[in-house]
Structure formats: structure tokens, C-alpha cells
Length: 154
Image (tube, rainbow, N blue to C red; front, side, top):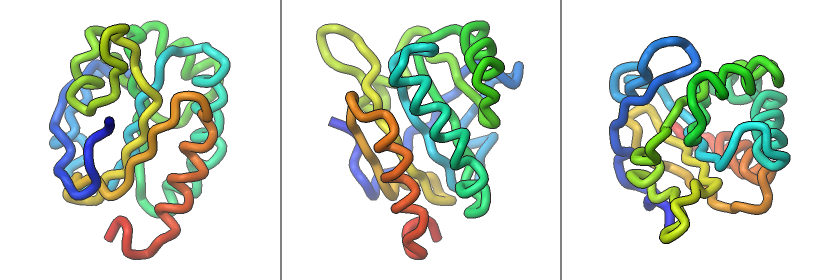
């Protein structure tokens, strides 16, 4: 089960496709953010999800919301995935799966990253969460509905 709405998002630091380490409470201080966890670069569902986030990126930026994607793939694989699909947002390498665990985005026993999307407000409080392993594009549709609610990220 994912983290609950109303709780503070745990801080973390991970290698990024930007070439630097991304630290939530430093790099996105005072900014709303979508964090989405996904199983694997280049898989059909994950590619559809990333491309859907790419295609709606300008809508989220219009609300001053950044996006980061997190999976257990390496930074090198993330860079290839980002380039292949022209992704305008950073991908973070959680190779040991510890951040996914911190965000309750791991299927127990098989240690598989679940498809979970979090919307954080400016104080990094979780204001929306959506979890659905099998419907990748529904994550984006859900987040679009959330950000269009004027009270959700203020």
C-alpha cells in the first residue's frame, strides 16, 4: 500500500540523468513535484507511461510542477531511455530499490517496483497518490485531474 495523502514525502537522494545526484529537499525545495515509480525502462507499459508524461509535460509545467521518474535501472539505461523517447524530465536510478521501499512502492517477496505516482505540494506533503500496476497511462490522467483542482497544490 502506498504512502498516505497528507503525510510528508520522505527525503531521498539518487543519481540522475542530469549527471548529478538529485536530493528531494534540496533540488525541489518549495516546488510541487510528481514522483512516479515504474518497473523497467523500455518495457511496453513503462514506455507508454513515460511518453504520456512527456506528452502532457507542458500542462504540468503550466502549474509549475516538475516530474521525476524512478526505477531500478542504471543511470546509463535511463539516459538511453530518455534519449530514445525524448523525455523532458529527469529519471533517477534507485538500483537497490531503497527509495521505492521508502515510498511503499515495492511488491513484497518478489522485490518488484510497483507503478505508483505521487503528487507533492510545495512543502512536499503528499496531496495525491495513484497506484495501478497494469494501467500505465491512467496515472497521467489521474494526475491531470488532480492538478486541475485549484486547491490541490496551493
